[in-house]
Length: 205
Ligand SMILES: [Zn+2]
Ligand SMILES: [Zn+2]
Ligand SMILES: [Zn+2]
Ligand SMILES: [Zn+2]
Ligand SMILES: [Zn+2]
Figure: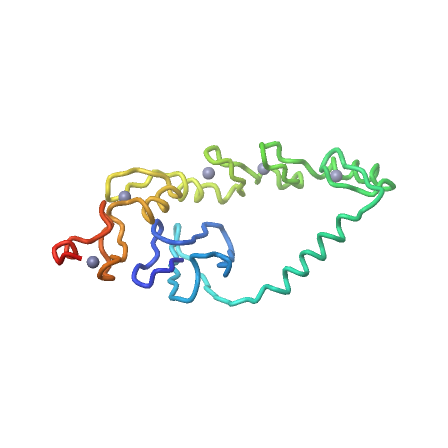
């Protein structure tokens, strides 16, 4: 997705993007200063083969949802007489902890990867893997796409070689070849190293 009405979002030039497998909701919050009224473009790029996709856009007033979340978190902090399961680290009522731990250790394991700690059913565990480069957690079937999209080196026309996330950042704010709106005449010009485009300098603006 990109905000600019003149530039269609590409894989590396965009404001927001998602590379998840399956459905994904991208939420643009009104609290974000860079958002507002305007035209947004949505680009959909395939990874491999062909697939069907559906794009839907909804405007949501989320003021009531926040009230609901607050109410939930305040009631769940009031659990009493519980003890931590040594396997899944969940707090379990003391009278059922023995039963729970037997069942839990037979069916669940915790991912040992630093910072993960996700509880997995034993049959799901071999499907849960971490990227060796960024540590992100993925399903077995997602890792090929993740490695290709996020960790394959990309070449910018300006000569620099970066991974995807740095490339998006580079092309939106650092690349001398990126197009920006000239602050004097309003045309799209290459950023270069100066803020004024050449024609404006000739006109003496
Ligand atoms: Zn447990
Ligand atoms: Zn994990
Ligand atoms: Zn990764
Ligand atoms: Zn560049
Ligand atoms: Zn200009």
